[in-house]
Amino acid sequence: MASRPTPPKPTVVFLVRHGQTATTGKLLPGRAPGLHLAETGIGQAAKAAARLAGVGDVAAVYASPLERTRETAAPIAKAVGRRVRIDKGLLECEFGEWTGRKLSELSKLPEWKTVQGAPSTFRFPGGESFTEMQTRICTAIGRLVERHPGERIVCVSHADPIKAAVAQAQGIHLDLFQRIVISPCSITPIVYGAGVPIVLAVNSTGDDLSTLAPS
Image (cartoon, rainbow, N blue to C red; front, side, top):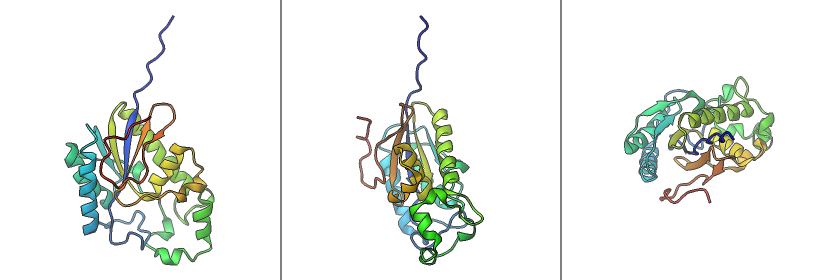
């Protein structure tokens, strides 16, 4: 009898949101260039780096191409002895005509109710739909998992893509993903390749990550 093929070893993906910027909670910066970490964000990135240095060997550190994610990934990569690799699949959602607008103004638009309550039906004017964003981030994570079977990797991205990835991993409909909170420099570890994804934590901003493991 032929032996069964050996299943791939599970990969732990640490999803990290970039640190705080001058526009966090105020504007929708999207993919506009030139936005850097604020002083608070630099400190948050340093703390995230120290936390991830304690999880064991990290095979790779990936980041979206934007400055704020690369600046968050830099101390993490240094702490784990790796270099930052850029992956466009980790990019922020393309907000199109909404890019750079104040959240206080956007929240008054009639479309805002759809963004919050039925995001799967919404496309940003001149930009990306939430469904396309979720497909993109999950495809990118899947590709990186295949590249790193049985290893630990870090992916530095943005709040909405990480929320969408968490929703997919937990089997939650995209219309409910706005109920997930992803804070600056929070860490969300997910195990892939062991059947269904296993979410070890969401929006972790504490200290010790070493004890997180599938039960």
